[in-house]
Image 1 (cartoon, protein in one colour):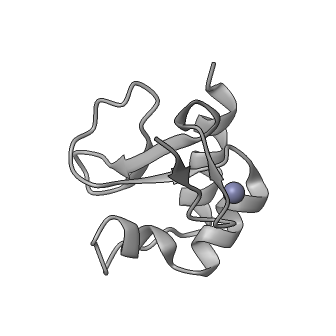
Image 2 (spheres, rainbow, N blue to C red):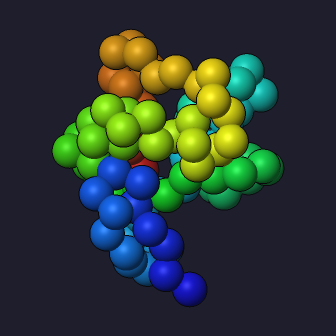
Length: 86
Ligand SMILES: [Zn+2]
């Protein structure tokens, strides 16, 4: 089943996208092992789609967490997590 990138809106196989979800602290995290429950957001693993998703406040919408804010530090952390992905 295809997933839609919350950054660019492009569709793709889940294998080519990463899942992001809220962790135990309510922070947006890369769900590499797909272990986090709840709603998730799918994203192409790159800075461009990450920035677009943040600009559009797409994560809060996708996760149904309107208050979910991803600040600059949060984006840096996510980018690092994306880079560590196998
Ligand atoms: Zn994308």
